[in-house]
Image (cartoon, rainbow, N blue to C red; front, top):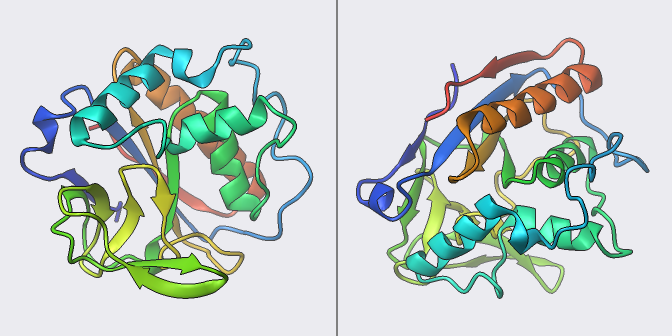
Length: 223
């Protein structure tokens, strides 16, 4: 069964052009990071600063409407593109994380990956009450923080998996080298088209099949 992902009541008025595509994959093969994550991942940047991409600019505007400061808490796609345009390059975590990060840079759109075996209930985009637990790492030690009241977070029945929409992922549902079942969430705002969102999903599926030939992959309908 594909993972449900919903926009909580009221959030659609803040992000009316938001669409997401869920790609669920089972029986994946993961492993340590390699030196390359795929060919030509930066081919569509054309030397532009990340905030100059129209749909990323729209995301900054939407984050401002949410009450976030987009230059302080950049969404994952913008942060990764900024790294790629410097000598830092993409971070190396593990095969699956490196892959979805690379897809996020290539298109560029925010892409998240979650271990479905660690998700409890339906994942939603909600405004935090300030009480939800967020498992993270501080000073090399795992700890539990709480989002600010009103902050937009990804949340399941157990707690927050990602803060400030697509800014900072927690440790509970992240993909590790032991992960075998995952859901990848790709999000777009206008003026990016649904077709462009689906193209990003298709490229992700293509590389997942190369990494894990026996994987069972389900692509949801953009919502």
